[in-house]
Length: 328
Image 1 (cartoon, rainbow, N blue to C red):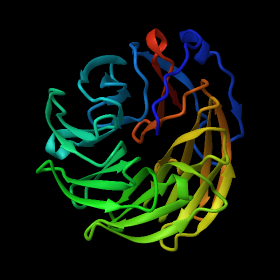
Image 2: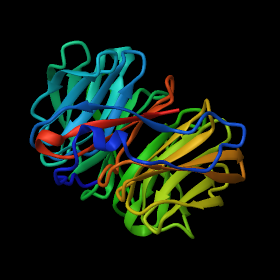
Image 3: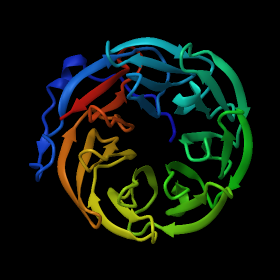
Image 4: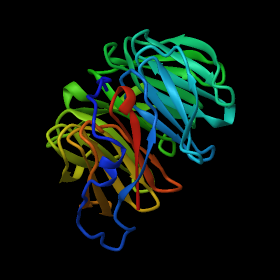
């Protein structure tokens, strides 16, 4: 993902007054609606954000730092400094540390969850973008946009253990610990590549047609499905045992993130046009769009809290930079 400074938007109440376009949920949770906004402010672009449900914290990338929000108070409680061009944040609660992908310096910062102090930095491939934690091997993966590769870091040792060449520009990925795999979107090749987490090698490459230029990705591990948001305005669901696309649904323009809620079986696509497409996984072979949630233009990235089922989307710039909160 490329951080994009967003133009100043309407005031706080504008989002809350925004209408919803709703299709009734067939036996699922209530429709999503605007709950509140968390003001942040300050200069700098944004990209990914990450929820820590247990600690009730939200980590928001913001230019050269990561802003940390206390979700119990809806207030900024600190920041992780010196993260030039930060894209993503990955958390390792068991080790009480986290990692950031600093695109402009080709490094990953290691920080303490308690103090937010940076402990060290690790050199990665060029322009690390998305970053994930793979708990099976206790490793961090950075997906390096200009490097066309992935850097694998031993989380406990904070040291690089492998560099995995990829077929093109990686966007984002997900870890399937049960299968011992990491799936990663190759945006410029219309592919997903499958990495074996023990050998650190690509073991399969899957075409995503009819999808094109996939950006976001989410996993339903129980049903062996991944969801990808494609820039030709489709969300595709793939079978991770075969690599085949088994269903697609239409989504809004400018998708940049996806999420899947195991508790409600809902898949989300956040779209730059100012919508979130919400689809229900009716079965492992069927997706149905159940709601098109109106958000704000530019709110293209998203994080899901699986405990509260809320979604968080950053938007705006300067004094108007804030996080929009929606829930059932």
